[in-house]
Length: 446
Image (tube, rainbow, N blue to C red):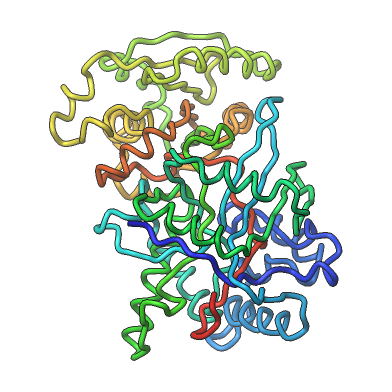
């Protein structure tokens, strides 16, 4: 099954970079252009210059964000801003954060994982991907021949290998210990004991890995290996391109948090909004709440309480522009079966995000597949405050509010070889970029 190995990671030199929080960032796909500018200005050696470089009007095939990333990477290695470890290692990380005032911690193991096609059932996806994103990520890896961030995956840890590793580093000082911009504390330990490395690798041999975040990067790793082979490179079993770098967390970890991903929708005609509740009444029971736009704090509190009380019951909140109330839709029993029959797998029918995507957006509002994939039509946020504000300010026509998907649902969907609608999960916090990097050049031991 899963082949998880230590690697000779590339880390920031703590003698050169005094504050690691100055150079790490969230993953590329959640960074806005404005945030990118902030990271660029903060430090000349920020990971942002490698993972999400700035485009320029003068860009060419020979000089663009990807080629510049490759040049920065080699320069930083030469100047010892980055240093490759001399020994293979696993890297254990701790992330301390809070959700709604509740303190939490999540642990992750960074290593390299043998890449296999999804059809083999070893590494499993759960979401659809966007071809445009994969094209951009492939251009970066072709230019840089490196992994600058980890794919976030989860696994079932019945033997508690993560707990065992936590005990093994209990008296060891961390390589990194810092607070990021959001107030989250990060620690990283380097584990090089050969006995421990062998035990960790062996513990994964009967396991499957489920991608939590990083589907595009995993498919890009497969495409990169394919591209190398097509160009005549001998990609052997131990070639770095036969592996990708992952951050692995246990499904049993109480700090493995999924937040909901709400949908903010535009281009809904006024008559469609006016008729929506009547059309939805065929499929849903409804509960209406007064919506006072002058007291969003109370609205948010009331909404959260109503949704939390109905988690797992196919209930979806709806806010509409120019309406003084919001509605919680409760799916009637067997409605998905009666509407879609065998067209949708029973496991997928249980998901709130499927009810929203297929029944509400696809059937009631008659969105086409192209509209469902168009991020100018549908925006996403995990913040109910941002979603409600988008309606009160009129930037969006409708907001559909969801309860989060569960880790067990993710595992069940992936094991059955099924795919959820896009943006079905938001693992929080995302795995930060810049902790460990990896070279894909032959002989690099990355």
